[in-house]
Length: 209
Image (cartoon, rainbow, N blue to C red; front, top):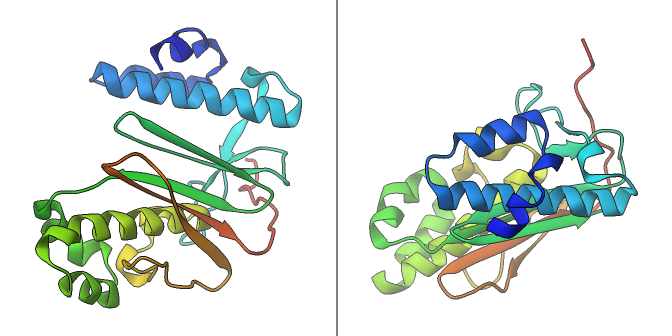
């Protein structure tokens, strides 16, 4: 990742460069830089543009209408993307309709107890409570990745209380109207999921001022 980032940082825009420089830990900086360099290279390949010429903005937030919704390529209504990284693992998703992807390191029991009531829908909490303590971290990580992927896909992110949405903590995702959610195969110690809208939707950016 260091090689990818070091050889391509010139394609990042000012905001990405500032974020890159703002990381305290070298490892976090390297992962962020590599992820965004690769993202721009792939977007450029899809669009037939130079990676540094791709303009990435934000859609309207579906919760409050502010300009901090899903990241999206300005002017490319038919191309949607999502990016996630955790530890040293990076996932990218591209689709012709809204998409969200998320990867999480499996949490320990203390994280499950600390965030369970914040993240989980009451029915998901009941699913976890029915499991042996040693199995809860895997199930929580699975549910968390699904939920983050779905909320990133809608553009609401964590601005929409995550415990209000139900995606399920069991082996099979709970069906969500208008979305297809699936788990992804990732290395041991991680959980990942992707959520894709079942109908296309044009990008909606806030009006220029």
